[in-house]
Image (cartoon, rainbow, N blue to C red; front, side, top):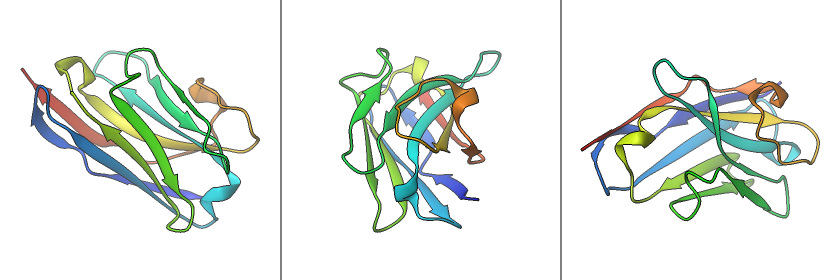
Length: 124
């Protein structure tokens, strides 16, 4: 089993940047496809980005493509999400998640492990 802990959220203004981190423990991160999801109040959890285990293939939601970058450092057992040009509609709790296998999946139900989330608030 793998435990995930997110950090790096906060309150920023429109156009600012933030970098989220997700530290893993229990098992090595290299064994999992990793993803970022977010959930705004009153909305369903939505896919943000995913990254493959070793060759670092990436997959993004259209809403963040060109602004967000997902990356991983398997040697540090850590996942990252660099968020640039933030907009008020990016406001949400951001979660990292892990799944076995090799496919980059956007469906939350296909992920096996989740962190507790970190709040990102973008003011206009």
